[in-house]
Image (cartoon, rainbow over all chains, first blue to last red; front, side, top):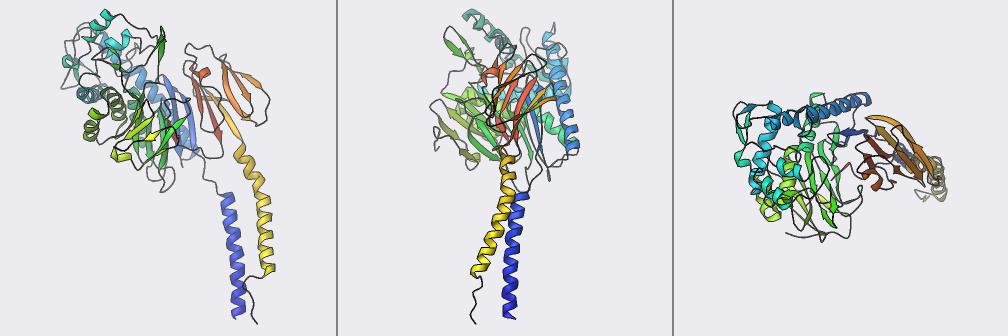
Length: 353
Length: 125
């Protein structure tokens, strides 16, 4: 009897071993569906986990269409078909004009966040960004007098957002959503997934609109997502740190993006409206994790412009977290994501705060 | 009679089974993990899928929009594009799964894929 049990035990052991090996060799989680394209003037990629291929394809198509519409019909300052373009072209902008609920919400939230920037960022930044050619990527360094003149038109004090979606501002001002457009695109993409039966409980999604991310659901049951943070000194595909995260929206503002060089001096695209020139700071990039795409995008710009000390209390108000990366490769983070960040490049040092 | 729970013969038998299983599965796994594919998307549609071979000779691919891609030793890069910013050419060679090179003016995106999972789910920049 004992002998028999031993024998069975042995067979069972071999059987279990084999099962383990086969399971290890053949286990194949269905690969995520990924679609890539260009929308809102940047690379858009939609990655769907544990989603049936056909449904995933349809959701991707809808997202791309919605982003193109959002840019060309609503948010763009430079496209004649867009609502914001028409608003900016108005002959008499001091007279309140009604806009769509979608555009109004974007203007209101952006103005609200930038109101905390001490005038460094504003909804009405258009006069200066156009002068520098930032929106059309035809960069140039303007003359001092031009900058002084344009600066006067970049205050949100003269931008009024009234009830019933009415907007008024001073003549010559240009409202600009360029710094939050990708984030708004992320919000839109997330909204479309949820409207089309995407279930956060058993599927996952990572949508990148030009480097701003919408992260929904989970990659596998019980797992969190891992997101790379671009190395400001590396190639476009290099990241110096990873962030494990659940659902969230993530954006990065860095002085390595959209740069140009004139007379030996390199300029980046993040203008400090109080000076009228690209911000001079020891920061090279700030990544923000927040509850919406618009917030993550607006806050990353704001953090870059106002600096870490001033940014911390603002981030807290919005329940957002940030990674501050300095030119000497020291990295400082807010408490909320300390446990989530892993540096993978030894040149960077995480500094205690 | 004292008998060991696992005799020498048993150990050999288990090892032999393990070896057979490994031999059977390893080549398949290795080749699957090693194969990287470059997927070229123009205006939202996949136009080409290029298998990148480790020891591949230089080879060029011309797209309808005039862009030229070059593969070599398991990597691919944009050799030529008529766009104004030339960012796609500056991106350099892609060789690891998940890497992306894009030409926004030409609405062209090149993404490397492999059966093996990519290290991260996305990159913020």
